[in-house]
Image (cartoon, rainbow, N blue to C red; front, side):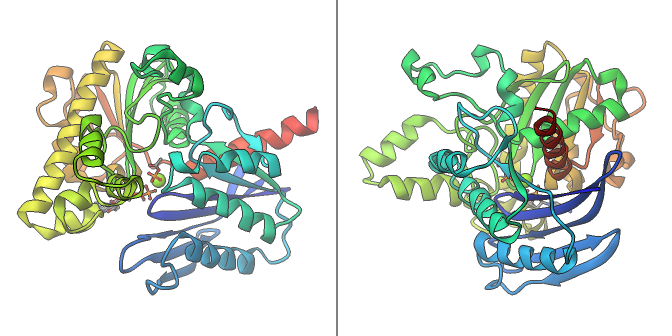
Length: 395
Ligand SMILES: Nc1ncnc2c1ncn2[C@@H]1O[C@H](COP(=O)(O)OP(=O)(O)O)[C@@H](O)[C@H]1O
Ligand SMILES: CC(=O)OP(=O)(O)O
Ligand SMILES: [Mg+2]
């Protein structure tokens, strides 16, 4: 039996899991530290369905991703004991032009992935710290990179480019799109729960601390709301989402902002946090009840609705809509507001199914079927890693 470990550093969480592979993959251990960057980060882990760890961490022991990673490795090493880990699969957010499929990580690959750090400052450095830490902790294990950008490489050229002079496209200034592991998992899940939509026109909304949407036709990504970096598209916990580049020029040229200040503004001080002046966390905003928190939520919902209209146009209609990610899976009020008034497109929610967070939340007569899928990037990473081990064995 093989053992595959997965590490997934998101912008506000680190998720981890151990899978056993024997006639398919089964999950032995799973856990996460969430709420990184808040006053009360929280660790939880289950071993074969029973609680292994459950604690509120003091802000210092998970002050940042590095500290949280040490906590994660400590939990893992204690739980795993002498079990041999065959491979560690990593979520790597940016694969750039060169990496379009799961790849075994050696020193050369690591160096090349580091050059993409500026294109995903909230993720890539943490993803690569995870690679180094896992290599130290499990020295004999194969380290495998699974890319958020890979699923989107099927984009037609018009959804892959910006209207810049052509040499920029050739240099790699493209609309890469992210959350690809999540979209790939959701697509595989949709095959099981809605086989009639497998070949259909589907929009998936991954609404977490990072948020994006994906237009999928015939199981393939044809467009993403995110682009060259994970800043574009929807507003997020702390990221601005779509922004007129003229605003950036104005702030740089007329207001004397420096590039590092701009990075901090767009990645860490904007989005829900910037608009609300309160928090990047949707739970806190829903509880707050201040006019600013309400406006931040209004803006979030409005941008999702615009993008949904645009994607339905690109797909020439819509058969299924899927919500996933921390907000998509848990915030019924947001789902309700996103879908309201879209009956012209054939979307009709069943209020009680939506409140209850069922898998199918559309009304019986709704032309568009609406689903909640608990996305599982970690399972997708494990599948890719297992496949790569087999391919290497066969070659
Ligand atoms: N019950 C809930 N109601 C509203 N929002 C929630 C709920 N549970 C989680 N969220 C939100 O989900 C977001 C985190 O999503 P997640 O996908 O876990 O993050 P990451 O992008 O770091 O992987 C946070 O904004 C959090 O407030
Ligand atoms: C790409 C991205 O935004 O990821 P996350 O939602 O995990 O922050
Ligand atoms: Mg995430």
